[in-house]
Length: 506
Image (cartoon, rainbow, N blue to C red; front, side, top):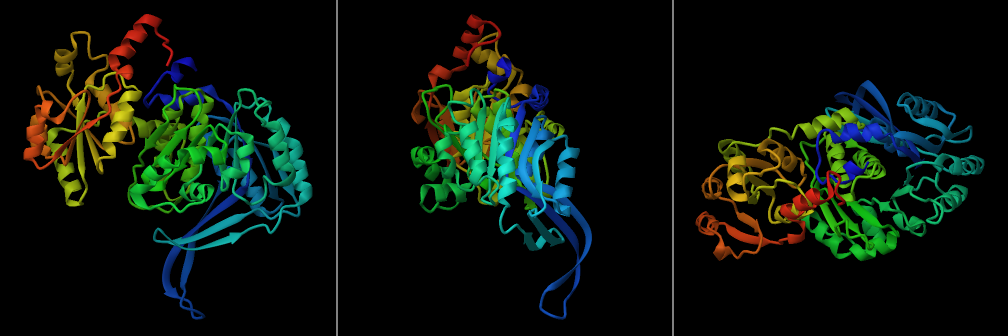
């Protein structure tokens, strides 16, 4: 996938290309069957002040490690699943749904003494009223021995292995020993190893390529209390080295729910940035479960197929955004991810439409950040800059120079990409909230219309050098100059493309 590995941004053709690669991914971990029971409430029971839910619908879906496997299969991977389940109704239903999804379950151990963990959520009117957990008190030693014996075969020849350790015991004892042996750095060759665990530190000796803790898991790993809200990302960044040491991973992706993710990376490979932020696109609250599993699945698929880490994390965030807007435990398919990404095409707002959105954001007390540029051939310098701009406020508006203005600024052979394509790519970035196109010599008319709280500009400038500064200050805003990365300039990228042909090295 040499060509894909050189792409920096997301495009709607990418999910289908990933699915065509069909990488073999082995998922090993704790299985759960998620039950979603929904009904109506019209009275309280006589025995206690508790509502009576008249159940009208019962849905079941694979959860835990099985949900990660389901998402990988839905996005095109060839999945092998390794776990232990009971020979009960829940275990049989779990295996049936996995098989129906095309997942290889020949390495799943069914044991008569095992109780398949099942989590029943009882809801009414979109609100979960109660959750009942039917869990095993202990996993049979014989079942774990059989599972451990299957590990070498299940991981052999796989492009990636995902360990889903939720502390239920499937990865304990002999299974753990088999994994530490089969996936030891000296033996795993080019195999990608991803650890999605409640305690990532327990797998530090494995030296995984990726660890994906959530905020609570990262907090436990560091042994410190996380701050709340927007302070969490700076906190993670400040503790990056400790996170990497404690997890033993080459890169750690901390998932932060509504605040997106923060990736920190170590090692001598300068092709990857040290940190990378994604931004979630939350909507109205849904009773969703398993978005983290979707994130891990998409991240693993993209990395196994050769995409850069930053692009892989962006794609994973997009996949999580798909399922978090749906109730229940669900998966993101290739087609759904394609539609989600294609939805960013033709999304450039007119000045009037943008002004209405900004007015609504301002009524909600949100801080508006405006920046502008050509953003012709998107590269890492651009994405770093835009992520920095996003952190200056709550809503990031990107104003793109029209094709005609780019020609005036850059010459007759630019832009390389038309304004509609540039707008679609920029809009797909999780840090960007709105995109518009302007055709005036400067964005001053747009500044006067929107009255941004912050106007961000990148380059070797001072606020006094910019014609826009006076307009921003008249509106009560401030001008902020962000980092300029000359070695990543679009001109340098185009020169490298011309000098190396149509397959440049990143």
